[in-house]
Image (cartoon, rainbow, N blue to C red; front, top):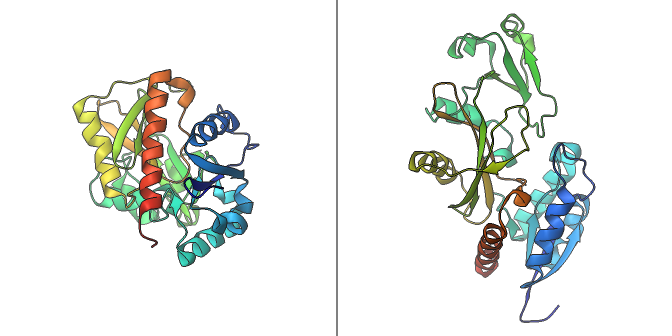
Length: 279
């Protein structure tokens, strides 16, 4: 490693079998472009804690659901924070990197989210629909997700470390991709049954304000965030999740020009993080 180039430990589970996505392709592309300005090494998430002190920053990308290695991930976070390791995304995020409990907080605060509860006594706060979604608070990639009838949710034993939401008959899903606090591009799935068959989406000013509101709420100065939303039957957007841990970026759905612009913005963001004073 030279003294003029900064170094990055790029964390990814290249072999994780993601549904409808190829993590390895995205990470091969990103690492090839980041190497233009940084000395870079790639490692599996389980090796990050042992290697991170030899680099200027750790970039956590397609690392797979941390639910599969929660204790090791928690230890990595604790050690990185204690030792002042610069992690990208910054570990201060309040979205998915801290579990999905933020959906309760945002619901209570009146944000435009799919209404969410975690107690039987709050069931009356949800719309009366035929089917509800039950998902683990620490879930990811649809692991543990269930569709249940209202009758089952009348029993307090149906709750625990889970969240409950009404099943929304949405028109489509749309994702907004941010670097730091700036929107870079948006993609949508016009067919609800094909979540990862994504196409270019041109957001309206109202769409932009919707997504920006959640990024502004989150506590990340440097990092990549994906705001996932659904277009409800009434036409409004509702937040599905705020992915601030390791959001897949669907870069293959972008034009070469858009990909280049995104990579340039990420490089600038990383230089900014590395140039920060040690926490």
